[in-house]
Figure (cartoon, helix red, strand yellow):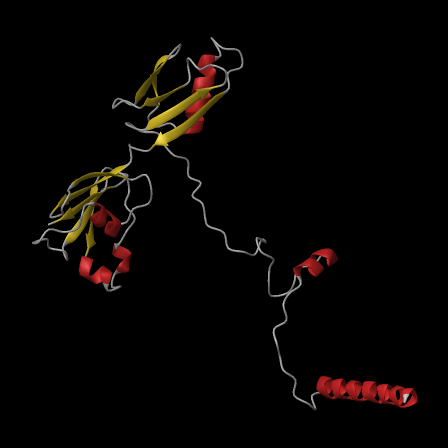
Length: 228
């Protein structure tokens, strides 16, 4: 009985090998199945699998971050921390004249500066009173960047531009249209760098249908959306 079993095992192995040979040369159809990628094995070999990337790898998409420095303006709320100097550290709002007031320093014009530039200016001024001052400036609330919505909307007025806002967003923030709003004749007033005012058309019905979608522009500080 054992001898018969031993005789069958080589025959079985020979048959399996023959089938594999036929599959490799194309005589027999073989199912193509997607094999899972072994990232652990690839990491040990110092390679990355073809056509894929490990989770969190360089090939994965990452959001694009806007690195433009923020410019401080009137009504912005700033948090100023001076290391080990609680009497100087405080939260202050930028006055309409673009200035703030701090102990030891007095009035200081901050409008038009970036937080880094203000931090540098405060450090230089405090060196006359404090040895090696360590200053950190944070914009706690953005209130200087605003846009306006006027005309036939539920809540006309000024709104914060602390985050990106498009025309449709602005209309929603203003509570939507009134009954007799001319939604196809909306326009945006924008002051250009040379001081002139440009007029951008916005057809609400077309934009909702995907027509002239580029009219739904991102608003800039000082823009006014007019709903006739």
